[in-house]
Picture 1: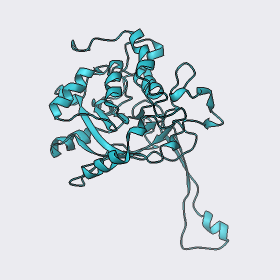
Picture 2: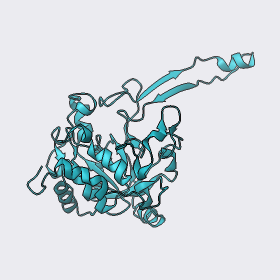
Picture 3: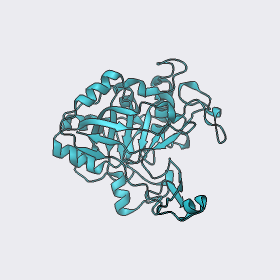
Picture 4: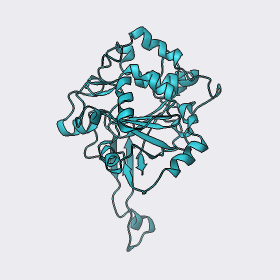
Length: 319
């Protein structure tokens, strides 16, 4: 932590569950959380910001031959049926054939994916006080399914390049991103994060793992990411979506096991903040420098799958 950022105690971080809460803000039955801040006016203003039409994908390939490149969990399995099934069905030779396949995706793995509001719970509750018990292996997420985000994430995107702020391609493993870092990046880039934005934080984490390999698996891996002390900043700016080239949270978090990933837990449960993990932001950072701007039209469209807590996605930035 920098000298400008006093590290909150574990008790102070736990208080964020109430002091930063959005429960009831948009009604007792609200299923959208911070997506409520993406109004028609926000979408229209974001679309009007497109100047050149240059587009950048913020995802990586989902490859069944390399299903876990970040050691975050297998992302996909793929099985093809044999050929010749069309001829067999019609009982005569045909000039065409077709192949079908089964694709199974573990959406919370190494691929770029959206975390829905039923993904994490705290003391038996999901966002807005919905019982975590209503998400089951058989029934799925019955109250906070990803399919509620039917209008997608279409809004203004802002990239804060924390790696560039410190003059590196990627931050050191386990390096926390603090509120002072976020404010300094805003000042350096001449941009201000505001209500309804998709805030993307570039640490270089994914690029480093792909270049050097992971140092451990899952929560045991050291990764640069947002510190718990950043949560008031995210709430005050009223962002709609948080994206990161990693798992959002710095690892280790600096707190106990209950707060092993406080940005995930407080963000999803208290704020109702939608997250996009393991994004590809290296090219975006380069394009932002080339274009001389750090804001853009942001589009991410989660699948309309009922009962799921996550969705694979290919977010795109358009300049």
